Length: 276
Image (cartoon, rainbow, N blue to C red):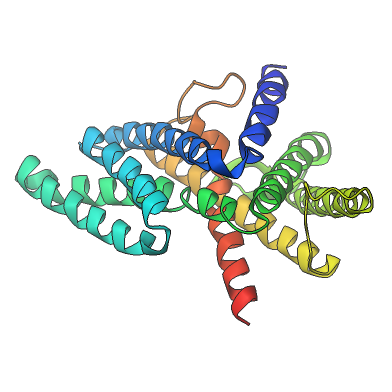
């Protein structure tokens, strides 16, 4: 029930941010940066259980600077990421004790990559021509797959999917997740077509349905892998949840783990599609 209630509160808030007017796109960027910073804090806390002592303030500042730099110079995200990564390396070189320079530098730069560079693709997607529709598609496809996997896996799951990484995941749940994402994607496209008949451009999916259904499968697979990646990180750190900020969901990182791979996959799929 806590999980359901938390979702009922968060989902409308997230969608409201997605559909803010263009002049307020900085609010969406700021909210995404805040979520990334919270997830980064949880990741660094887990890393400390493994013996590293990463510079939390410097790592979180790097995440926020990455978002600020992307907002100001959206075409230079990778350059900014590289500069910030080198900055963290230099900082750890002079800040950490000699035996911890490598683990601290690796942990802090990986944090910037894992929750910074991945999450910054959300405001990048949001700034596209049909940005709100793209972000809505991403979020709903991931949520639909997650919900289907949860309930089908718990009810009918028998065959373990990745027992070493996540013992509760099953093949039945994984297949239901793909089906759930496809159903949600089809529903969104049908809704967009109906809105178009009413002369509303709130949702816009101009390509053929086969393109979006293919994207839904790609996003779902990336989301499931992202979930397994975070599960592996948690098991490596010997923790059950990344945090306790969200009742029924654990920490912020637990809630966005699927997006950390799904969002970049959607972004690069769009880039490849536009160029070819």
